[in-house]
Image (cartoon, rainbow, N blue to C red; front, side, top):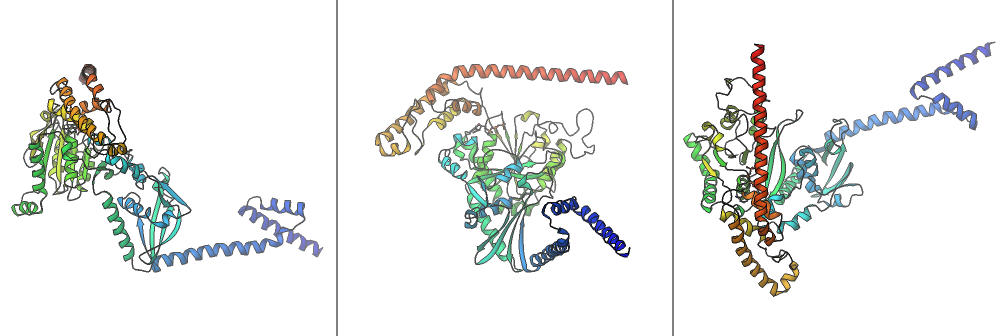
Length: 554
Ligand SMILES: Nc1ncnc2c1ncn2[C@@H]1O[C@H](COP(=O)(O)OP(=O)(O)OP(=O)(O)O)[C@@H](O)[C@H]1O
């Protein structure tokens, strides 16, 4: 009876143990019974052992974590790289060049170490060139460089990689932070850390300086272009580097030499270090503004980029017709400008800014704004003159409609030099023709019918050189014929360039296509104008209806 009771109680306690284990590991008792009935092994005797091993492993993992944290904190120095900062590109560009990246057996291939930036900035395209270079002096020479820029580069994959730098053992640690927002892409959730042993981080700073030097040298002949962002509701305003473009030579800008020289001299004088002092001594705000105006596609942006390249200044662009241009965003963006740069404010004739300071509809623009509204004229003036606006920057504003601008915006002090851009005249049309078809040295020699020899053959064959000279002379003659067919000041240089690019290997075909092109371009313009008039009419009618409705209600 006693024995039965003790058996009963041991059975009860076993049941309780199983119930607990089943709670921790669902199906555990079923697993035990199956093993026992199939293999006649009683796994219950191993349970204490399993518990000891399991709990030891759990304790050890925590102790190890503690030791590691202590080691990281007190015996190591670390540099954490933010993936949304330009420093990411700087460091990864350097890492991609190191042996430990090339030799790593677990790696991430990139065609461009800046590719994350592309994903983040969503600007598409290549980091080094764009269409604008089709007519640049260096366009062809850059083709090879472009090819190189898409070479495969390797960076170590997730985990820790060891490498030596100036005799120090360093760790490159790449991890995926799964706690960060699930709407971010894998690369945006990444964290990068470089650590060294010891409490002195000097070697890490040295590495960063070297990486920066490398990065800058890569961009020496380029113009770095930043665009203002902050159009999406969850995006805070900021400048994102979007492209590093080969600097555009001034000679490729079709504008009178006298005007070009005036602009260059003016900017050169303004950014001279003595000029800053001159302004400071006289208590005049150290600012200078330029207004480039004229029809679309006449070279306003091109001249701005050429200036940036010439003076090796980065260029910061905001289009006032884009959703980025709210009062709050523009003000924040101006506050973040570096001391020396060019700011390009495009389309300053856009809605909001063209309303005079005593705003239309009888509503004063002094009404407090919510900040997320479109930029108004008074908002823009505040930004341009305000304390947040960095002194020393070169401000270039562009517009297609000078007549729409409020005089307050163009008064001296805000606009110090105005440059007019015009539609193509005979001289400009001929210059574009020559720029497109004149063969450059080392370039595949295109015969006037589009057939030609390879660069190697050209070098070997003296006849090819003579032929090139002849082609250049022919192109000059053809440019005169071409220009004579283009009506004066009716089409923009961009439109003329567009026509020539349709026949970029065949100048004769381009000349033959002119008459037809003029006819279709005029027809398209007429259709576009009719559509716009129709749209305006509809809008006016809708407004009238709305106003009528409101009056009835009142
Ligand atoms: N004066 C010019 N000199 C050289 N290239 C020009 C000129 N005008 C236009 N182009 C060519 O036309 C294209 C568009 O020019 P760009 O963007 O500079 O015009 P824009 O006046 O700024 O136009 P928008 O007012 O529409 O912004 C470029 O590819 C540029 O090379």
